[in-house]
Amino acid sequence: MVIHITSPIVIQAAGNKPKHIEEFIGRVNSQTESVSIARMKSPAGWVEPGQTPEFDEYTVVLSGKLRVTTRTDVIDVKAGEAIIVPQGEWVQYSTPGKEGAEYIAV
Image (cartoon, rainbow, N blue to C red; front, side, top):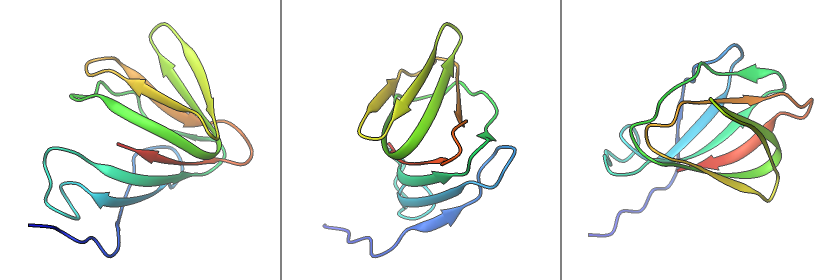
């Protein structure tokens, strides 16, 4: 059966500043356990606590710059770029630029 999602649900995010998460597909909005697809809007200076995901994370940056810090690297992902963080890899996301960032997270 086809499921039409007409709007996302807004979810509270962890971090030092408010971050806007619009979940289109996932546990909260569509009761989908196998995947989560959300549009994120994080303000300038936002930093979230580090995490070790239990699944691969795919992120496409739409505007601004998203900083991805791992145990061995710091990568600035800019608009039009993407990054894959494998399951079990410690990672911390932040938006150090004055413009913040908008991105799609899967």
